[in-house]
Amino acid sequence: MNVIKRYSGIGGGIQTPDTLVIHAMSEYINGMYADEFLSSVGLSAHFLLKPNGEFIKLRKTTEVAWHAKGFNTNSIGIEVLVEGSHTYDTFLEKIKTDWVKPEQYKALIEMSNGIIEHYDIEKVVRHSDLSPERKKDPGDGFKWQYFKDQLI
Image (cartoon, rainbow, N blue to C red; front, side):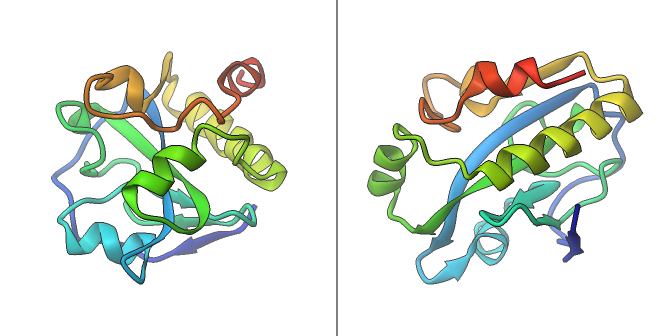
């Protein structure tokens, strides 16, 4: 598994994670790559998962990332990137379809299992599970049950 380190200074202090949060966001937003866009709006995640299955590591897993309002101080956030450039409306439409690449599922399962084992994580959730009134990701096009069935 290829992990590119591109650390973000956006986030808080030290954490002991007990939850893994799976997100989705567009690969490009307003002409910026996902990590640049997150920084521009004062947000971060621990990992971005590119469509080709490579990870970009933005924060250490022991550091707080600002990825899930109200749940940042005890969770690891992985943003699975939706290929291409999207507005929020086109993004919402895209995540209703089968959008996740096979390489992404493979890498996400491997990374998630490593995180679960290392931190003894018992709670793996979608961003939409935490804030159903505000968030829709990772969407109906993400095979949640398939993903969950592959976890240790």
